[in-house]
Length: 283
Image (spheres, rainbow, N blue to C red):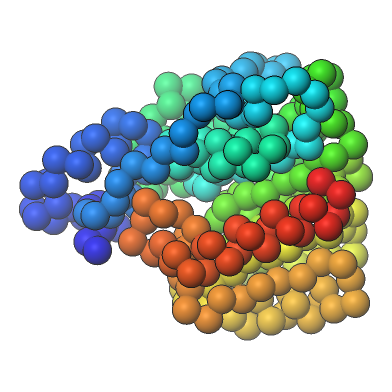
């Protein structure tokens, strides 16, 4: 599978693929659309979905079962590309499993025109993402938790969080901050910072503060997260209710079934494990 837009620049063959324009227009991240990728769309029958505006102007995409009654909830934290179509579809998948799924747009302050998903310049992408500091993000998680607690269709004492890449790290940090969360699922999120990133903490530094059991889901082929970091985190988690699954044949983004890095075997197994983890944690 050929990546359409590359870090080193777009190749001429990429531009002959008409599906690229369709996917990007649909809100997929241009950097990660593959030549053979197809838009993934979970059927919406039996669901209610759409955008909500939370206190403070925080936009959030919500998908939930249409039936009456209270449901457990999952906060879905996006990758660095914001709430694009794949993140929305993850929400629909959770809704099909019986959850109220909500994906806050954490980057809306730095990207009011919602251009992030269409950017191909990583410098521009990082500039937007960098504006969402840890404390601001934790504040948005709190806003989301409070909003869920006021909704008649949410079981407020049964809330979990999961996130991907950038959102994977957010998941660890939120689980160490909020006792309202009953479980977490961290997909290939960074575990520690680079030298010189003092001034904020990283997941490896907050293990002792975890208030909910987190299941980490990582790939051994991930070039951005060394296996040594994963093993060090596993050692720190030993004896706790949190754990990490390391898939030896999986790369970064192995659940994202619109990317070249998608790994069906690892992704399916990890998704099933996550749902089982939530259920075992009472969510």
